[in-house]
Structures are given as structure tokens and as C-alpha cells.
Length: 186
Image 1 (tube, rainbow, N blue to C red):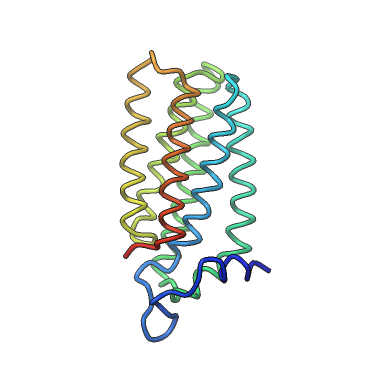
Image 2 (cartoon, one colour):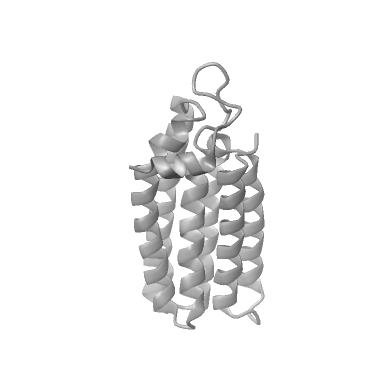
């Protein structure tokens, strides 16, 4: 179904059997980051907290659908992920969901959709990417460190409007995703 995307990305010096890429999920992970980043950028356009939640929810849903639809084509052109890499992906998604659920229960129930709540969501989301680094490579590590530092700084620096925090975080994700999809660095 998404053969056009695989063809667009061209052939690679890696193949699934004789020379697999050390991070075969790097391209599909990059697509996921691009979609999440776009959702964050869209959510940052308006200065309404609720729109950010809807934007990230739509992006996560759309990202999951596209990721699942393209993952096999994009992964298996670079090799087969190990069981460890697959497990890390599942663990990271579950930890993010649990962390966001706990954060939402603890903070949202007291403060509603506050600046602290929204910046905290970014910290939790970005922390979950740490778990995926062995599965998707050093570009994800660079993005994760930048996004965690940005989110933590935004928690302390209240003069930065939260929509700008989400905009920058989204743009970092889009940039990292593009590098992962186009260049799939080793």
C-alpha cells in the first residue's frame, strides 16, 4: 500500500539479509516523529490548551495508523528488528501512556489544563523516547535530549508562552524525523 514511499526513499546500502541496518525501525520511527511534530505544531497555532490536547491526540492516532501501515515496508528494507528492539518500542509506548495517565490524574485533577500540566506532558512524552534509543539510534537520542532539556526549561521559565514551547518541540521532532527517514544514520 505504501510502496510509493519506499520507492521515493530509494534503495539503501543496507539489505534485510546480508547487510542489515543496526536500527531497522529508524525510518518508520522518523515518520512517527514527523507526524507527532506536525500535530504539535498545529496544536501550537492557537493559544488554547484544549486544542493542544486534541492536536496531540489526533497526531498520535494518525501516527499510529501510518506507522503500522508503513512499518513493515520501511523496516524490512533495512533488516529485521531484534526482539529486544521490538520490546523496547512496546515498553516505551506503555510507559508513556501510563506516565501521561498518572500525570493527568494527579495534576489535571487539581489544576485543570494548566501551563504546568502541558509542559509536564512534554517531559513525560520525551522521557519515553529514551527507552527507544537502542531501537532507533543516535538521532533519536539527540532529539530526545534536546526535547527533554527544552521541556524542563519551559517548566522553570514561565515567561515563555506554552504554545511556543509546543511549537519548538514539534519542530525539533519534525527535523529529527526527516533526518531519520531520509538519511537513516547509523
